[in-house]
Amino acid sequence: GQQLNQSPQSMFIQEGEDVSMNCTSSSIFNTWLWYKQDPGEGPVLLIALYKAGELTSNGRLTAQFGITRKDSFLNISASIPSDVGIYFCAGRSEGSSNTGKLIFGQGTTLQVKP
Amino acid sequence: DTAVSQTPKYLVTQMGNDKSIKCEQNLGHDTMYWYKQDSKKFLKIMFSYNNKELIINETVPNRFSPKSPDKAHLNLHINSLELGDSAVYFCASSSWNGYAEAFFGQGTRLTVV
Image 1 (cartoon, rainbow over the protein chains, first blue to last red):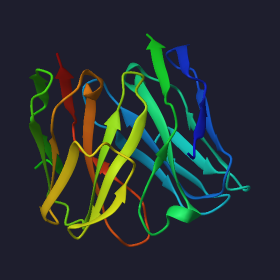
Image 2 (tube, one colour):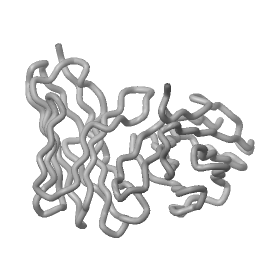
Image 3 (tube, helix red, strand yellow):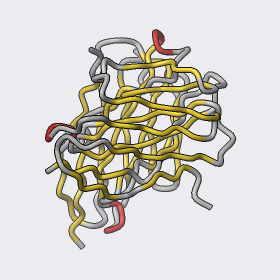
């Protein structure tokens, strides 16, 4: 089935550092979403992207929809301890436009050292 | 008010038992989903319902039977539970307007012993 390759798998950084993670797909996607999951909770939507080349920010978070429509990245600037968690990319392919089905990446576990 | 709520949050049960997980959303969405998150945190869709109609069934064993009494509720019933069913199950909902923003519940951690 369809898969998203998300990298890196994990990151351990110092507070204040910037973070970058990305997702790639073998097929074209028409929607990219970025979620964060805290321990014991469900994924929470951070940013949604709908057009190739779109660049969207949410506070210290910035995400872009790749122009090839096969990739997306998420940047977190000036990380703080509460950024700790698992970040997931999710996408919807053109073939799933009428179902709402999302394909998820494997997740990036972020740890921030104060 | 919780947007997508599911109960119970934790469920420990023996192999062979039958159990249900309930989900309700108050977002006015007409599409609801069940996702399964395995021990490696991988999230995979199981089912999708739009206005009480099954849209997606991702080759899930027929021991899993979703039921949607109305568009605000989607329950998941699991028969003859197996050890491999242990996972976290998430309910989610979205609107049906061409956008795929899904909002998730807090999850139900199912442990089969």
